[in-house]
Every structure is written in C-alpha cells, then in structure tokens.
Image (cartoon, rainbow, N blue to C red; front, side):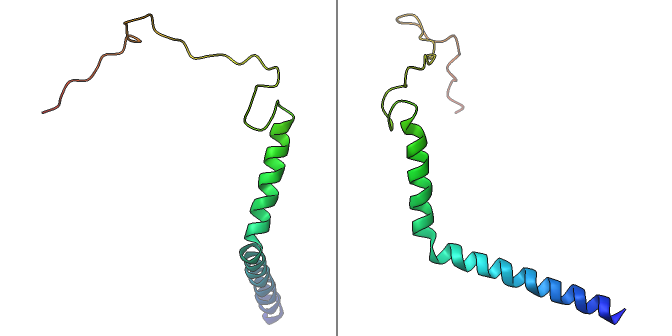
Length: 81
C-alpha cells in the first residue's frame, strides 16, 4: 500500500513541476508568443483580401436600413422617473 501512495505522490510532484514550468515559460516568453499569434492571425487575414481592407471577393450581406424618417419599428422606452 505504501508503494502505491509513493507512486501517486511522485506523479503528483511531476505534474505540479510541469505546470509551474510551463507557466514560467509562458510568463518569460509572453511577448514573443503574442507577436507570433498576431503574425499568424494577420497572415491568415491576408488570404481573405488584405489585412483589414476589402472583402477578398466575398459577397457580404449588409444590415437592413429603415426607410427615410422611420425607425426599425421598435418602441423607444419612456423615462422610468
């Protein structure tokens, strides 16, 4: 029984050290990780028609517009006071 408890304790220690190690690595290298993610995200947007410009030939729907001088039919709430 003692051997089983020792194995569980050692496994727990290994897992704890791994979590602390990964957390430390991310903390130390957070700037490079953020830059890497930004570059990958902007690179994937480039294939859609440019970084923040154009739609890349996609036909995107537009929001419906109310007729001139009218609302979308929703009531305007009155003052609660």
